Length: 465
Image (cartoon, rainbow, N blue to C red; front, side, top):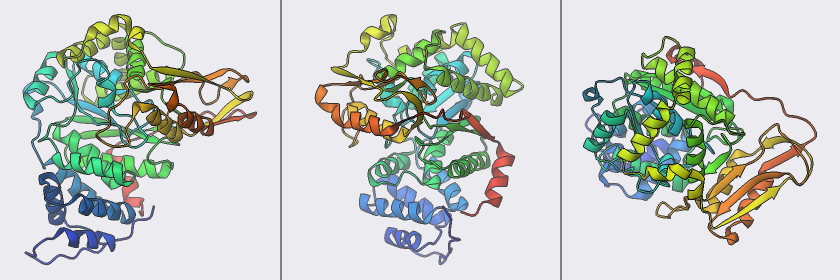
């Protein structure tokens, strides 16, 4: 993706019009901070028609946003509504964010681990976007769990248990809420600048001291090519650091689903098993990545001298049960019924299930994770339109992963849906997503690169996009 060097032309004191901003970006120009602030303020206040915002988003996707535009967009969106003052908590505030994946449920493990280690984790999360699942949708599969808290409620939960995972309030980064929904419905998700501004505006509005970014690459990532993922990681680190938040980004594999489940309630089940000290087959990548991310959070939060020392503290919190207790306190504080965790498997009541068997013997050599994400969505775990309800019990449980040898007739996955009539399309998607070969694929690193501020600045200086 090559960025054309944009023109910057603006008359002093000129009156701004949305149609001019659309044309300017369409023609390869770069918006000034004043123009971006005008656009963001209008989006937040509902001044502009959705088709105008959609047109600008498409122009931004196709023409690209410069680094200066991305920074200005991030700050303008952060400042488009109220912000959380974390200083009253008396703790270091640290968060983690993933750029989106299939089966990515690390938030439910790392947030309580960090809280158990003495940090505060004010996590403002989102819903399903495209083929990826939504943290809030998964948590709302817990009966009674409230994701929509007021700022005072958010602060009380954080003071009580150290972690809170919530949605945006109506007044917190309202511009992002408008643009996020439009991006999902207009095919404009995969823009590095738009992704960066959307993620960081919410994180910076939460008053973070430090942030760990999990940037996905591979077949299930919004940025499939590693060079695009690296650019996004560097852009986010540099943008967040420029805004005063200590930040690191890890480039992680999304060439297969993370862990053994993808859906809503079944992902909560898998997370709770890890928090309970269990190590179920197929969940090792989820456990390892969660500990690596939590280790960096603990390190950046000043609770460990190195990321490895943070990893060891994180693992201790997982083993001794303190992280599980922190998670249950958070769920209860936000209205969730924690009695369902007494028999966690009994709550899983899908209307229908179907087991898919291997059609031949061989190694699982490749998984198109995006296609698998769409299969999960078609089963009812995701949305086509924002207003659609979700099936909390829909999803896929994977019985084999990339690199595994499977025999013909061996179960590869179990599909869950509300009724049998929903299975044909997801089943076709699943079969087309899995490649079985006689050659064992080469192992893929779970974490391939780590970006700090200096490394991010070096890449951005050298990149021509």
